[in-house]
Image (cartoon, rainbow, N blue to C red; front, side, top):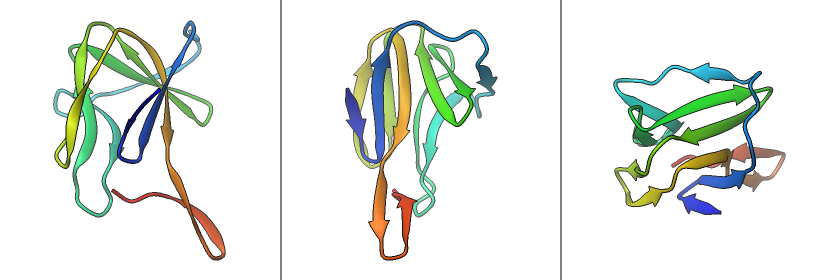
Length: 100
């Protein structure tokens, strides 16, 4: 497993062909936008693609590429498929996604 801030990448086997590809933004595959800072967890669209299947998101890395974020050290990702999981936090009355 790989964690960068509020994003967790879990390696998974295989890939489901029925998943829908999410278009990159300005040459980057955005895994999570930072609501508080405007920063983003992202990888190069030349080396990876993001897919949605139901409510889940999956990152397919075609060749080694760094996972970047303005406030965190980059993490080198190996080729493969990863489920993208957003960390959640408890607040009285609700469970919400962490704001980076």
